[in-house]
Image (cartoon, rainbow, N blue to C red; front, side, top):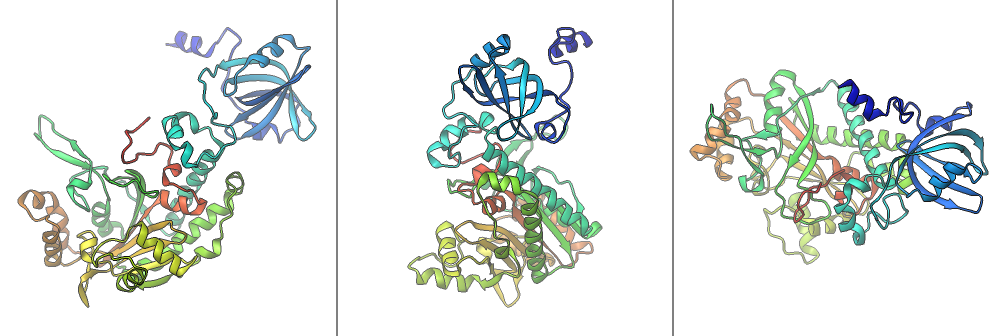
Length: 461
């Protein structure tokens, strides 16, 4: 084993003797002149006497200069293809505009043999629809694109700040299963898997749509819990905001009503977005985006579903009462209210999941509220009080076709919670990619996730 490892690392050959210890951002800060530079060739320029190599790594970019007098390095630099990986040794010196490396030796680590045009690190509109198919087919290579890098770095910070926000408020991060029998919506809206084995026999499960069920069980122990995990929807939509697999924030809070949840959701969204924006100046500069945090300050305007529907009808849209608002309806509402976030309360029971409480003053609507972002970015998060009364839960399950013997077997433990010290509670659900898309003004949600799963497109890679 050690011999194979030594061969792989080139031990004894003089090539790639040790792990990379210093990144470009570190090199640009120090005064020591000897440089060992690992990275990729973004681009090069060749003159009669000098080859200029733009070398990048995960932290930044710097220029390496190869003089023709250095014959072996000159010949390699002249031939090397962009996107090839290299190991350069040289001397740090002051260039015309910045520090650069005067090359002593250059070694080719990995040759770039594929002919891509444009290349991942070239300057082009990677979010443009004309390049969408090309970029998606080559997603494994286009993760190197600076703009896509900036989006994913921003998302990384956003996730970290979410964890910080909940941890500081003593929420427990609860692991929750991805394989489950419990679905928030219909079985045909989920991805089904064979879970059979020799002991338990033949059984089918689903990829989770929402782990609210497990979190509701946990609040009776921990009171405040949250989770971030992939959720899966068999979405038959090619809209700019739909993914078949996405990262889902779920929060469940004991002793909370709808107004509590609305307040907490607004405070959470604003604080996490603000902290992320303040920490991601470089990423925002790369993307050419300026985030107006004032628009994000809660409280947000609230209207009822019925009020929203009146506005929609006044604009000539004939959507029927009881349906969920789609892209067209949300566009009408956001144009009506300009750049303001909008909470819509009292979503009809027919459009919501069965665990959500009915409003006592109107049992046709639920104690729920959805947050709609301006500029056509649509729903970002939702809040809901959950049913505590067993009779009401069974009635709602019957409305959704979930009281057959097979369905009752699946959901019985969730029903049983109502017979064992149930307390008032509610939850928040938020699509991470949708929020990142809004903040960075990305045209399509597919470009806020590393490897998007989309309707009408086989997963690749």
